[in-house]
Amino acid sequence: MLSKDLEGTLNYAFKGARKKRHEFMTVEHLLLALLDNEVASSVLLACGCDLTRLRGELVEFVDATTPLIPESESTLETQPTLGFQRVLQRAVFHVQSSGKREVTGANVLVAIFSEQESQAVYFLKQQDVARIDVVNFITHGISKIPGHSGSDESSPEQQEEEPVADASANPLDSFATNLNTEAEAGRIDPLIGRGDEVTRVVQVLSRRRKNNPLLVGESGVGKTAVAEGLAKLIVEADVPEVLRGSVIYSLDLGALLAGTKYRGDFEKRFKALLAELKKNEHAILFIDEIHTIIGAGAASGGVMDASNLLKPVLTSGHLRCIGSTPIKSTVASLKKIVHFLGDFKKSMSMSQI
Image 1 (cartoon, rainbow, N blue to C red):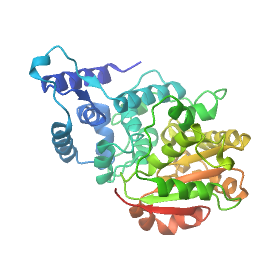
Image 2 (image 1 turned 60 degrees about the vertical axis):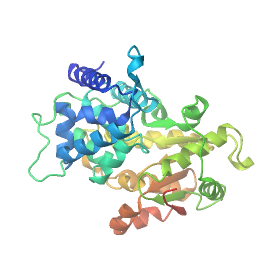
Image 3 (image 1 turned 120 degrees about the vertical axis):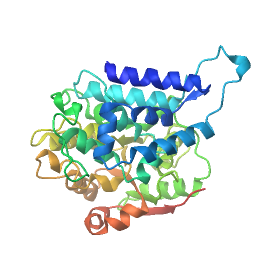
Image 4 (image 1 turned 90 degrees about the vertical axis):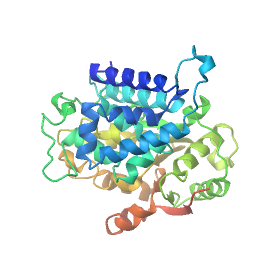
């Protein structure tokens, strides 16, 4: 399932961590290892990433924050963290959903962006490398660097024909994550220090109209954690009656875009996902970095992008949606997104705590 190249990258990473007596293998260790992976590094370069700077930041962070195995406990092995395991599990799941044969470094790189609260994602965002940039290059060869084209030679991911996911599969399983299920499985930690934000989100969701809360704040302040924390409260029945039985689905835009090479592929997937969500009146869609859906899918030859498809559903009130966006992107893209985000009610500007 894992490509030989990726297996070698992971083995090398574990050997390096053990040599330094690191107790844990983290998401930051994983991203650091991907810098030496031919496929992943070529994608990062196409997205405008300074690999030397990123490597320095990761090495400094990993060495400063990772607990060490005592020399007296030489028999202990370096253990992967839950975040590390989640990244690999997501990568494998997405590859299986799209019908491909092997997981490559590029797939793992996309999956890393789901760990929004990790320092790895923070470092990438500091260089303006977003998940949508990575997916656009992998799928369509769209580079942020002038003159850097996504030819077959430059991106091994594109050498393999990527069939659209099996039409018989449930779109929610293929293109979204059920946060309630994650909470029930104990993979979501209790939310601490964000009670006001959760209360405000609950208030907006409980409205009959304009019931789509928008969380605004810089990267790393905990916007994703608010949605996950709300899912945990729903599972624990610690929410108002109007939200009892609600299910929060986190949109995976990377999986939705992956393999959409032909005209209409993206629209077909997204419409199927929205139709499945509308079947359940208790469904709530969470879209992290919601500004990135503007233009998403248009590169696949479709007439409409994700925001054009989603807006009518939100306006009609058939689906509630929680969005999150950083302040910088909100200001920079205001002319493009103000029309779309008009369907959202700003819940709270979040800051670091």
